[in-house]
Each structure stands twice: as structure tokens, then as C-alpha cells.
Image (cartoon, rainbow, N blue to C red; front, side, top):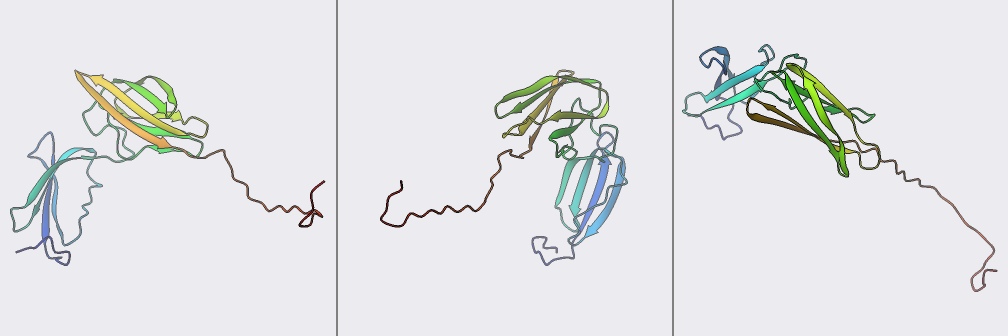
Length: 193
């Protein structure tokens, strides 16, 4: 019997099966991992939505989850959605330019709202073709260089939303430290003239 709660137990085996969400009987990849090797390499599987099932061998313990595989250089959106943001792919440049990667499986009109802590920075509509698209905006200048981005798209009766937050804190306030000395001929007990 396997005691999977024992951190020293390296003899257990986990069997996994990756299937297509659209065709649950179609096995994309399967295999086993042993001991504490909890990493499975899916770099050769194309981006998309999948079901992964993992079982602890010799027991009735299993888990099944829907997962999204996405390769950062893909041009197509891995999910059938009017708006999708990968967990990676958003970044801010040193000059304060924000980049957010957004995907859509359909021709979509996306409303964006950019706000700082002091109010609305910008808002409007962007028109995206199917695939992965990039949204870019400059973080406001000043001491509070924070920006919150909200994206919304409405498609076939369903509202899709995504958000992103950035803080580009390069304060213009500088602290200068220096040594100065002041000397005069005043001695204790006398007054300054």
C-alpha cells in the first residue's frame, strides 16, 4: 500500500491521461511518473483545452481537471472564447508602456477601461480579429504610476471579462544626502549679533 502523505515515500506511481475536451475519448498523451517527479512535459502538445486525469496507482484516488495549454508564441487562441488572457504574456517596459496579450476565437469588439488611483486614464473600443492580439497603453506619468485595465466583450448572449494590474513606481522624488558644517565664532554664553 502506498502512503502518499509520507514525504520520504518515493515509490508511488501516478498514471496520467490527457484527452481532448472536444473529443473526450481521444487520448492525446498518456504516461506515468514515479516518486516526486510531479512535472509532465507537454511541449509537444498543441495549444488548446484538454482534460487531464491523474490516478495514484494501486488506489482509487484520482483527479480530473480541465486545463488550457498555451505556448507563448502561438498566433491562435487556445480556447473557444470571445475574450481570453493567458496567465503569462503581460508585461511593462522600463518606459512605462504596458502590454497585455488577449486572445479571441471570434471577430470581437472589446471595450477597455484604463484607470489609475486618481481616475479614468483612457477608455474605448478595440476591434480584434480571431487569434492572439496585443493591447498596449502608457502608464500615467507622476508619482502614482499605477494602472488597472479592464476588458469586456459580449458575444452570443455572454459577457466575457479580463483584468490586468500594473505598478510602475519610479518616483520623481529623490532624497539627497550630504554633509554640511556650519561654524562661527560664537562661544557658549554669548549672543549672536
